[in-house]
Length: 291
Length: 261
Image 1 (tube, rainbow over the protein chains, first blue to last red):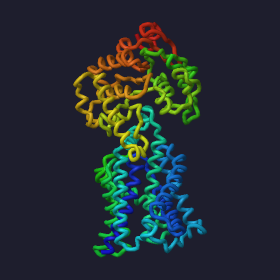
Image 2 (cartoon, rainbow over the protein chains, first blue to last red; image 1 turned 180 degrees about the horizontal axis):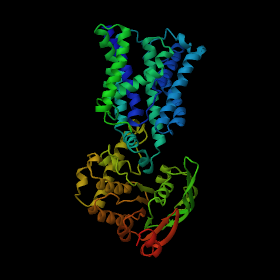
Image 3 (cartoon, chains in turn red, green; image 1 turned 90 degrees about the vertical axis):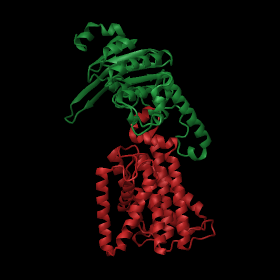
Image 4 (cartoon, helix red, strand yellow; image 1 turned 60 degrees about the vertical axis):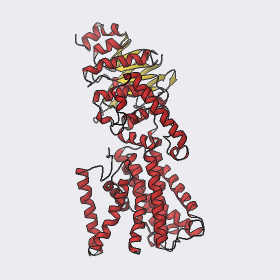
């Protein structure tokens, strides 16, 4: 049972991550390769506050989201103005910088040794989520709330403008819209929710090191999004997250050794992606395509 | 004058470092409340000039004034907010959006387009959405008449409309904003002849009833003759002839060099 709950918690964390990625990739047409960097920033800042202060979850979450959001503003100032492939390369650069900092700034991050013994979340400053059951229900509630927030955003006038920018940015500009600002907001929101996922991850596994926040992780999140589907429906990212979280567990269940299952998992994701790009480029449940 | 261009020059350098002059000191003025046509051969620099006026193109020398204000260095969205609307050549409505969404994104009312509005100001957002919907319906009725078919297609994707119909709606939606000057880049290009008269009527109505000013690029000379009050002939990056439409179109040089008559 605990094994299933663990899968459920990881699924909820990935749902938040993939939903946040859909905001930039699916809605604002910004193919970002630095989602794991924001996930990592959230995990490390969250860890610091969890270990140093006895604060309620909401306070820590707000601090983590705001701090990561501010970082994203600095990045978006430089990168959102870039077009297409140059934007992708800009976010790749940011991902590499953050990973290098996490790996080498040993005094602060403990580098490759990681940080063990991260305390659990305290919901109201007193009630600590010590059992896996509590974590499961907490992460389900959080994933549902985040999904509702993104659904509301995507069906708001703001979501409509992102859809317009996705289709034809130049026309949106000549209709009087500051598309750089609108895309920067999308980048900000995406970063803040990725950092929230990082906070939950850090407190749940109680140990973090930089290998959880690599470029591979960013690509993994993008893969989940493209499998599930990009655009204005929240179900696409949810299904995408479910596929990438549950598939490796199914491979383990059929008795494959871990080393083989890991490699096979990557091959299967690759095949799914290639097939989808040919036959359903918007993903399983998506309603938009990359421009 | 609602629009003035002063000594607009633009050149580009190709991969072999050869410099080509695209615009060689264009001076042009557009009178308020009139339809002005900009004609000239392919590659004369007409669309480049539109890009400069609307802030899409920035690598040029010279000055652009909109209603007396210097807009030379302003970004495209700021110029649009100041009252300039544009219909692009070849671009029409946004395929993935419904007809109503296409109308709403052109609205001068941007309430709700801040991501936090839908959580913290949702009553105001709902009211402004209703107002935008009513404005869109009013404009469609004003432009295409009572009971026109577009009123039944408001929730359909724009891609379900023909190219010509999309051009018509794209032009009508310019009335959703706060535009005083409309730049129309080849409005009848690729459009079924049955719509050309409709375009003509819409443009005249925009000027006479909606108090708009129109500057248009067009290759259809009978359309220009019917709709435009003034005309500028651009050739080789410079205005060769300006004046009332019939004067320009009947000018011997224009007839010989551009119309081949």
